[in-house]
Length: 356
Image (tube, rainbow, N blue to C red; front, side):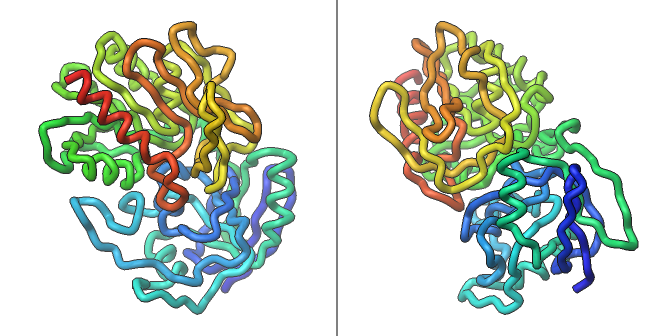
C-alpha cells in the first residue's frame, strides 16, 4: 500500500494509498454513482482514457467473478479487459465475499496493470467535479512523475473497437453491428431475440454488405473523431434498412443526419438518469455513460427528438419522421443498471420484420 496522489489539472491534490497496479497514469477524471456493478463498469469500453471516481464509498466487497464465456462473450464482463485508466475510491474492501467471486478487485486490477487509489474523500472530489466539470488528472506515485494527457484529443474509438469481423448467434435476421466500443450485453440482447449479429470494426465499410438492420454501438470519446464511420452511416441513410444506435451511436447517427454535437460539462454517468419520451408523460430510469451529446437545436426538420433528459433537458435520442431510423443516448441493455428500456430492442427487431 504505497502512498500515492490524485492530482487534478487545477492543482487540487488528494493523498491516498495504492490498492491496484503501481504505476502513474493520466486521464480525464469522471465520477459514476453505481453502488454495485464495478466489474461491468470497469470493463465498459466507453470509459477508455478515464480515471473513474466511485461516489459509493465502499468498493470491492464482493470481489470479481470468474472469467467464463457464453456465446463467445465474457459472461460477467462487458468486454475482454478493463478499459478505465485508473480507479478512485473512498474505502477499498480488502475482505470480499460472494459465491461467484474468483479474485479480489485489487488482484484483478494488478493482473491488468490498472492502478487504484483509496482513502480519498470522494464526496469532496465529486463536488469539485460537479462545479468545474470533468477535469484532467493523474494518479501519481512519487518515484514516477508524469504530465497530464487529454485523452479526448485521441481517437479512443479506434482503441476500443474490434479489429476483426466476428459473428454471434443464429437466425434468418442479420444485423451488422458497428463496434465503436460495444458492451457485451448489447450483443446478448440482440442474439437473445434470435438475431445473427455480424460485428465489424468502427471504420469498416459495411455499405455493400447484405443485412436486415444496422446497429451503432456505444463507445468512448469525441464522436467527431469518427468521420469515416459517419460517412458510412450517411450512405446507409439513403436506404430503408432499420438503424438503431446507443450512446455514441446516437451521436454518430445525429452527425450523419446533419446534427451537431458538443461536450457536456461533466457528462452523464450513473444508473438513475430520468428520461422523458418526447410528446408523452412516460418517464424511464436509465443507465448512462457519455461525455458528449447532440445539440438539440441542430436536429434537421426530417428528424425529431425521441427522448429528453429530465434533469438538464439535453437530448437523449432522435428518430427519423418517416424512415425506420432511431437512436438513444442511454443504455437500454444496462448491465449493470436498470433495464426499464430494454423494450427498445424489440422495437428495433419489429422494424426489421416490417421492412424485410
